[in-house]
Each structure stands twice: as C-alpha cells, then as structure tokens.
Length: 592
Ligand code: ARG
Picture (tube, rainbow, N blue to C red):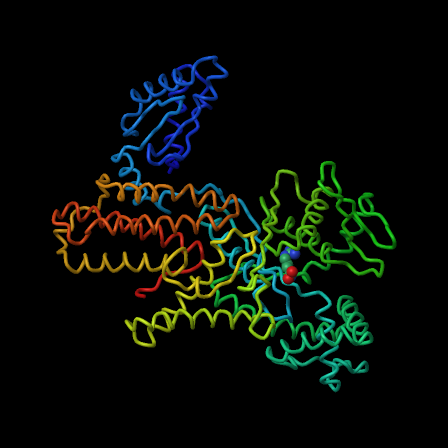
C-alpha cells in the first residue's frame, strides 16, 4: 500500500503542477504545529523565488486546486501567511486506509526488497571465550534488522561470524597442556586417532581461557608457547586441529543455547576459520595487481582517500612474521560471500571500536573490485552498554557479566514485580517473567540509538510504565482482555461487521493516524538500520491507544455498530503492535 504521506504528497504535487508550478515543490511533512493542522507543505515559499510571485498567492492557487481535486482526502486545506499550506486528513479517507490495511497481507507493507540478498553479520561471538554482554547488543540489534529485512521481502542471510581462529585457541591449547600433559595431543610420537570426546566441559573451558590469558600476561614463555600453538594450529598440525574441533563443538553448543534463550538465530554458523583457504590467493592477488606492497616487513594496502578528515593508516594484510590478521580474514570472507551469495548489501554490526577496521576492509574490497560500487556496505557501530556508574557494565565483583546471569537477573526482577500484585500463581508468573524479561532486555537495548552508549538499568527496563518493553506488552495484554470480554459478552449476531468507522474524537483520530504510519516506519527503520525508530513507534502507538482507551468506554458503548467499530480498531492496534514486537524479537504473554 502506498504510504499515507505519499498519498497526500501525490495530490499536493499534482496541484502544484495543475497550477503551472514544478511538482517537486509539493513536499509534505507532518505538521510542526499540530494545534493548527496535521500536515503541512512549505513549497510555496520556495516556489515564490523561482516564479517571482508572492508565496501566499502561490499557496492560494494550490489550495484552490486541492479543494477541487482532493476534497475526499482532506478535511482542511488552508493557505496561511506567509505562504504555508495547512492540511488535515479527512476522517473517512483515514478509515478507508485502515480498513484496507486490515485486509492486506503484512498489513499493507510493500515487499520492497524484491528478493534481493542482504548479508547481516552480527553476534560475532568468540569461541572459547564466554559470551558476554559485549556481544549482546550486536546479537539483539542484528536479529531485529534481519527480521525487518525479511518482512520487507529481502532475502536476509544472518551469519554469526565466529571469532574461532585467533590467539585464544593457542592459549587454551597451552592451558590444556598445563592441566593435562598426559593427553595424547601432546605426545609428539602419537599417531593414532584422536578421541571423539572433548577432554573438558563447557564449564572447564570457560575457566581455562581467562586463566590462560592471565598467565600469558606474567609468563613470557607461556605466551610464546601459545603463539607457537596458534601458528601450528593454523598450519594444520593434526593434534591441535583435533583440540580445536573439541573447543568448537563444546563452545558452539553453548553459544547456540545462549542465543536461543535470547530468541536470536543465525542462518550461517561460519567463522574466521572457514575462509582460511582463500587467504593465500587473496594475498597473491593483491600483490600481483600492485595493490599490496611491503612496508617494514609487513604487506599493506593503502586505503587513504582525498577528503578523509584525518589520515587513515594502510590496511595490514600480512604481518612481518607471516601471520594473517583480522582484516585479512574479513576480506577472505567477502570473497567467499561474493562467490556463494553475491549479496546486494552487507550489514556488519559490531562495537564502534572496530570503526577503522571496517573502513579499511571495505575500502580494500572496493579498491580490489571484490565488491562492485553499486553494492552497499554498512558498518553499524554500536555503543557500549554501561552500568549505572557510567562505565562498561560489570558484575558486582567487577567481572564481565555472563549473559545467562544477566538474563536471570532481569527475569527475577520481573518476577518480583509480578508477585507484588499476586494475580498469578508461581508457575504462571515464572513463565510470564521469562517472556516479559526478554522484552525488557531487548526493548531496553533496541530503544536506544544503536551507536550511542547507554546505561543498563534493570529497574527502569523492567518497569511496567514509561518507554519500556513491559509497557508495550501491557498495552497488548490489555487489548487482548478487552477483546476476550467483548466476545464473551456479545452474542455473535450482535457483533456487526468488523469495519473501522470514521473517527469521532480527537483521541480516536490520533490513534488512527499513528496506525497509518506503520509501513513508513518499518521501511525507515530498516533502510536507516535504526531499530530505535520502530521502538519509538510502538511506544507512541501504545500511548495513542491509552489516550483513546481513557476517553472511550469501549465495552460500555450502547450502539452495537459503534462498539463493533471500536473493536475493529483496537484489533488492528493489536495486530500492528504484535507485528512490530515480533520484528523486535519478542512476544506478549497472555496475562501480566
Ligand atoms: N569476533 C569479533 C569480536 O568479538 C566480531 C566479529 C564481527 N564480524 C566480522 N566480520 N568481523 O570482536
């Protein structure tokens, strides 16, 4: 369905044109004086200069033309000094728009993606290191972007892109040698098969990496051994490959469980290790074509461009000791993705500290022609999640918070809130707390602009009032209960046809106008990779519903036709809210 603002602008453009002016002057925006009108067009002011006329005369002309052409669309058409055109939408038109919306697939959202492929690289957990809150935002935001894109008809491919090839692997291997030197992997003379079963559990593995990392900071020899082990692993040394496999199996199973508990899923579980075979060819290609050159023993590609605000260092693709780097593996990944999926667009979601890395990778990819200029490459940089003290979020004892514990803390907070009112038995409260807790966590994150740091505040996020996930769920639950009561109280033959009528109050119209903005908001949130805009929308829609609900005794309405109309309207509110929260990656409970 055409967006409501476009429907309006279309008419205004035609009116400019009919009066002999360039149609492009007919731009329409939401009014910034809602007390005067709902929409406005300031085009007469700009046209005045070009046509050497008084703005008010042009505005008058256009307003007259609109009164002729579009009386069904506008309830108000005013030309006011010095040359504004003030507009309000006709109630019947708005009702017609919403009824069409209610009858269409996806509530009238156009499938603008047209099946084009978009790779979303998010999550980015590192194997062998526990998944912590630092990866949380990327996972939550990426999941939403993927869901919005699919809903808009793009072919979205989500890739977790594991960090599974770095020094952490060598550290864990050497830590394992310290702890269990008798294992066959460390016997140079052993040449049998390696065990199927990993010699450690996830609990042990999680404990090994921090121990090894700490040890490497004080013990130079240990650090050198870990580097050596990493190097041998990367060159295919069989026993270390076998340990690596164990680490992967144990770690990935745990990661899957964790992501699942967040409602985050991936189409691909690829990682840095998967593209290592592309790297020699990649380096050779860049070198042969003169793009990569030796600099202080390393191999680098210049990426600086005219107009850069500051000097950007070249991208190192091979260190002087021969090791490939993070950037090299991202370039290898691009080559593989081009080969397998030829995406129309790439979206990477990571910490903002990786800004330079992605500038370098994107520029090398473009310069070498691996990604053609008409393809979009986006790095969505995310800000840090801080504690109430304004510093990166930590546990009470100062460690990095495990995701599991974080989720549990939120669930417990929600559970406590539900139990304050004691409207549910414990079991139902536990289930509801899980559902509401996830919404609190995700909405708390998504409602902040991705690139900004934000304060993780459990009390605020779990509040049932204000701009929070639970408040949105509460709105849906409230509508569900009105609808259930209506069905109970009203015999089927009295229910009337479910048509949304013309608004009869300001609150009703405000709610209807919010509903009509749905398709525009989803398109913008996706194309601007800005899930916070979708959050803002569901919040405003919930508030508009509240305004309507508080002034309209829906179930007490005596006229059955009018009552059925209210029911049709709030049913659409519920559908829109449910659709939006599904895109945001959470759902509503039955009661709360
Ligand atoms: N593993 C990386 C980290 O923890 C994030 C990976 C992001 N994706 C990518 N293609 N580089 O920082």
